[in-house]
Image (cartoon, rainbow, N blue to C red; front, side):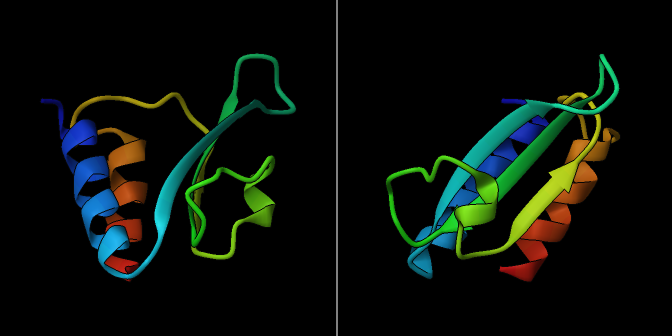
Length: 84
C-alpha cells in the first residue's frame, strides 16, 4: 500500500469516528496541465456535486497526486489528518 493510500485510509477512519465522509474532487486548473485536487469532509455519505458544498474541512492542492511521503499531496493530507 502506498503512503497516500495509507493516509487516506487513516483519514477515512478518523473522519468516520466524527461522523464525516471523505470525498475526492479533481478539476482542471486554469493552466492546461495543472489539476486541482480537493479532498473534502462531509456529513453525508452522498457526495455533493462541488467540493464547496461540503460542510467539513477542505484540503486543496494544485499538483498531480503522488504516492510517496515526499509528494505535496502527502503533506496536505497529513495536515488534513491532524486537523480532524
